[in-house]
Image (cartoon, rainbow, N blue to C red):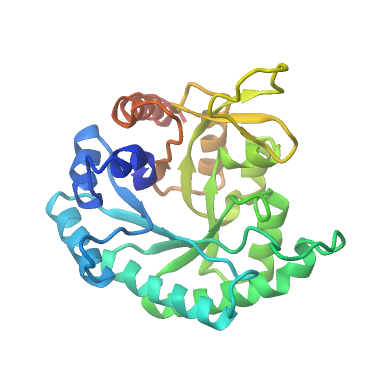
Length: 288
């Protein structure tokens, strides 16, 4: 079933045209079957717990399940890993209030203060595993599955995601598989999705426009560089280069039967872009 991430409405949030509570009704009106929240933005110094309950009440009133709660974290660059673990456990309490069974947290964007070129992912892995294990153990006590996502470059390739998943080795910990994000590290989405599909607990669908390179003097026009030096720009789902149908077919064949949520990152107006993306997604879902 199609869901949507609150991140897809970031332009509307930034302009203060909508707040997160109002997004639930908007998502319902657009035709989505559920909504996820990427961070929470309480109003007027409201406690996060109180705000989470208000979001849940509105979601229940509209019969719009909250599908996932996504938060930031960095086990490598935090001052105290135990404090970082505790903060994520507190987020699990928020996820429980929201009524979702899923929480995605970051693991790290890489070593920020080290210049040793011989220090890499394998050296970081024990620390990442320690943090993820502790958080998912607490998640189990609250009935919440925890996930990493393939983003942030440092832990974005399917190889590194798999290393982390297999090292944590807990059925309560899996992946939020974003079918488009693998392009940020120049990995073919269909290949990467096939690698991580057995561990997918939730799915983001997104699309990108792609440029091999820019001509001398050509404006980047909102593009960002991939790890390998190519250029990507957010696209309406179904209008870019991501093989959405193929990726979703791979996930379905691997046994995934959960929601697939659009995460739109383009610079088009949010509402028409999401309308078109949802229509394209529904056509795809009908054919796989």
